[in-house]
Length: 410
Ligand SMILES: Cc1cc2nc3c(=O)[nH]c(=O)nc-3n(C[C@H](O)[C@H](O)[C@H](O)COP(=O)(O)OP(=O)(O)OC[C@H]3O[C@@H](n4cnc5c(N)ncnc54)[C@H](O)[C@@H]3O)c2cc1C
Image 1 (cartoon, rainbow, N blue to C red):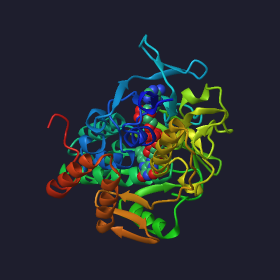
Image 2: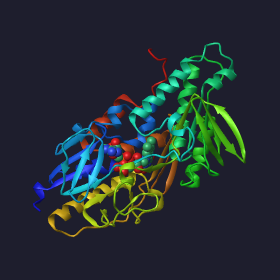
Image 3: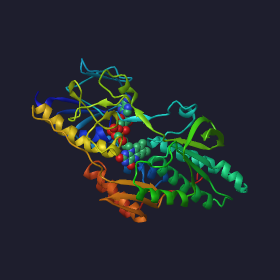
Image 4: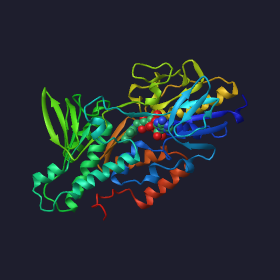
């Protein structure tokens, strides 16, 4: 198949899809389909929530990033591997392909908990972060200036379900923002932020040294950690926790659900080999088993040759995108496809709006310097040199201080 005319169709414009498209420039007729008009650098969604970064920094429009690809905004509704065609919701035309890339990512897993999908806030997109920020502001706006401390606390109770890195980053960021707003508005009392985790510890996948920084930050921002605790029910204004067989209901102005992910529902219905969690079983070349012209990467795929903590991360999807693009070129040219062992590039958690903990080169550092290091690490991983330079310059010259939770309409 002549490379230049090959139709390469990429489904999903996240870490896996976008970076594959960028690496494939000039390899064929590339089309990228995404249900959003922008990429999202999810590891910095917490900084977007706090206003430390702006949407254009971490969620640039595809049109600014991709010169060589056609971008179609729409939701993929079905894939026909035999006819080599894809259907997009509310579009009559079908998309043909010679090579297909599956990079549709994951979605929030509510584990069937009563009321969770209906009443909790997810945290995966720019719009999710906007909703959460608004919810916090509305809760603050509802506290009368003369409210007693216990009433302030009740009105400003937020729960985060899931004690992984997301839960820790979100809870410290929210606690910091809310405490700052309480002070600025001269309210009496303080907010209450709780984090709920089923296992016996928070951030279980991380090393002890980084966890020490996490523990100190939780203490500093007074985040209440409820480990060995399960959420059994969520209602519009409360959640019920179960610990040691005892149930307790806690009123909450907002419950954020970051307690796990599941594979994109579209993948669930595809007739290809998957593991018991529904992840696509890809060959070490990233080709879907039995379909040489279909590649899969990122959160939709089970890829065995990795350090286990890399599963379900942007780090993995990003590294895989380079292998994926290289192998697509080799496939089209009739060359030999490669495989790769993927390793961890480092760990970084933001802790409140002024601190972070970073593990890089085997060393852990914390505090404001680690926050700067995290910004530097992430600048280097943003898509395209042009975007990195613009964002780096903006952070350097304009700063990265948080935007306080001002009253609505202020
Ligand atoms: C808040 C948050 C923080 C995170 N922090 C980190 C971190 O610090 N470090 C780290 O390594 N990982 C982190 N992750 C995980 C990381 O973001 C994912 O592992 C990574 O994005 C996976 O890449 P992907 O390409 O598989 O999926 P995604 O990046 O999620 O991309 C999937 C794309 O497909 C699109 N899509 C989905 N369904 C459809 C459809 N039907 N039709 C069309 N388009 C569709 C989506 O809009 C999206 O653009 C974080 C995740 C979240 C949510």
